[in-house]
Length: 328
Image 1 (spheres, rainbow, N blue to C red):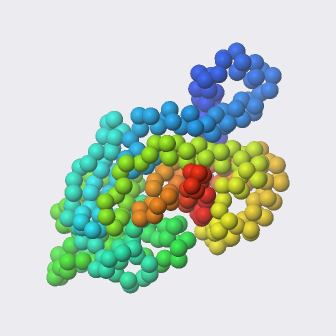
Image 2: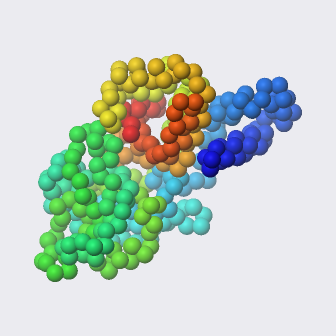
Image 3: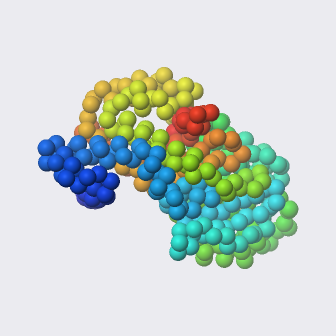
């Protein structure tokens, strides 16, 4: 009921906003003659315009990418052994707060398997806080979402990548088994500073990229909404064009299997509602032209309903076209 009400409110809001871009009389006439469905399609189409996203991004802080639902970002530079905190200010700009000296994995490079003593490169959320743990890990630990969809796609394994404190009773090494460790007083202060549900962790071998092209982000968001448009209006060929031939879904389904599965679904020709919120588009550390897109998806048709988080991993072609190579 809550989502149905919000879907209705969203439609009306879009209708009002859309009237700013089109002649009001033309809009009302279209609505009078064809109903809300036709207006919806026009609005869905407008969200696939590069001009809309260029204007929308004009004053947004995109130093780390396009971010809708995180208020804090922790970046780890393994080369300099630092963990840096950025927080969103009242102007929605990510402002640098503090550098923490950090210990990372004993071995250099990206984590590949359990026990390789490496800290992974990647983009992670924080899944929970642990405050009752072995004294080796200090007073508390933040558990990251390693392995993520891209890690799984590449066959990486292992688990238990934490941000934690330092031993309170044991001797301290100048490295970890793959986690990120900072001073105990600092992790306690960090705990009071961040909301773990709204904190993103970006880990890289060296400096985190902070100057992202608005044109590139606008292009990716435009194409994301073209993907959505084709999905809503049952254009199976247009929809599949966004997928790479080497696509493998998180559950192991390859492109040909995925194509057959989606063709059957699209053939039902059901009216669908698809709303994307909490969208984040970030360049993936240590990987040229690879972007992680995450969002909360509300999907409803006559035969199926889904509400949950989704991840698309995409490569940019030479023509700046996105190709989805895995999704979860």
